[in-house]
View 1: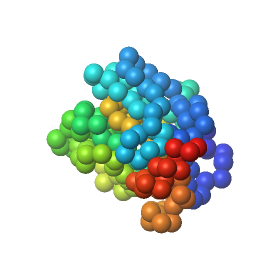
View 2: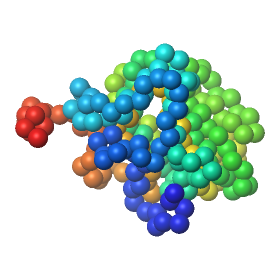
View 3: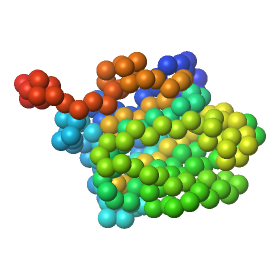
Length: 196
């Protein structure tokens, strides 16, 4: 998808308020995947819900034969915790040309590292969370190798997604473009949104 494109700054994989945000994503499972307006931030988000979280997910790229192909080392996900089981997985290519899968889950209590899978616990606060992952650091700590390329991402139920993006460095909130920022609406913002 992005392998042969110039990669710098910020690259967004999905934005809930974008036009057809899941166009490059595949939907899987029996649960519900829909776009709604979140009451806390008053903007469109993607909601994934299911009685059993592991039965419903979205994945990128849509075609499993392709890869995302991003080399930017920082992954940020703005996710709303719905107080239910939740999990996400991603696969990277490392400096040994080996595909390494990382799984983060709020159902896991400890870290388990096997040759091809690193399963990590995930602690989330109630409401909106900004999950930031240093892909170089994760790959180095788990496998003693270097991150080369991001290949795939799967987001399972139960959550809401505001935005998922990669960056060439960590950006302070005030450095981000307005659409990337996580802010709570004011009365003025709510009234402007109501007029649109």
